Length: 367
Image (cartoon, rainbow, N blue to C red):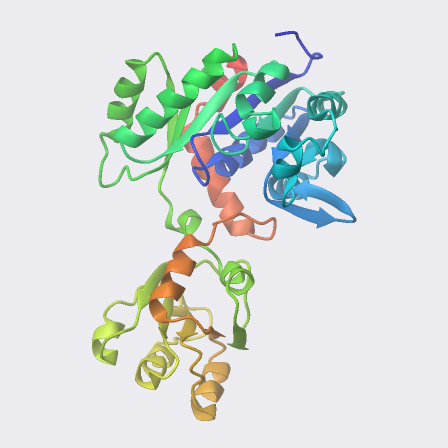
């Protein structure tokens, strides 16, 4: 591998989607910023993208640009995005672009005048191979050592990390170590030691464990409103309102209320007015943490005007969907939990957790 300029760089990979790569990126970028180092960020290949001022850019590139006020052009921070049918068109020879050249040129522009560039991959080490630009290939091409991010457990993270290490090794890429996210160290305080020993048996250093956080694991009301097809009949889909717990109301109201915790999203058929009224009754004083943060009404059943007025008076987020309760609960569970620049409290929590989990000074020395 040849060197590419004077900026130090690190490639953040993961063992799959939603493992905590963006979380780790936010923490690492904050640490670099706080040490007054000139910072760059890049995501060579993006699968989930936004269109900002006519530019198609990966949503994580947009997030980092906004949170850290980065000066680089979005199409340099996110040089390759994959719209629908892109991979099919590439395989069939209908795309003649030199994607590697695009990534190299974009990296050189981002790295100019920077001390450290954080390069974020997409999914596991092999993602992107279909267009000749896997994460392993991109890391090799940019001469970037890798940190692999996985998530809690014992067997699965070790198995996945070892598997990903093999592909990076095949491309001649150095793996600095691994980070394991969403580790429940309260219930299992011995997990970090077990993971460290298990990974060491395969020559991989555990750089740190990021503790499980309910706030980071659960979506906001905004994501419910943007990812589910339905009608907002009360309240607002607020970005900063994080769901603490999801409860399915399919029993008597008294029993259902026993399931409620702080900031519960209640999923119940729209014709269960007993449950809806019981949820409204839990609304506390202004400023207090709500027991019910929102209600999803299923089956397409719209409550009576009287109940709707009470929901609106309580300013309770209420969303009416046509799907049944089971499918709605599945859809809520499957919503990808992404961080948005407006999620200030969530980002502060991420930065604090990552900084506490990793020895940032030692890590930056090794990049």
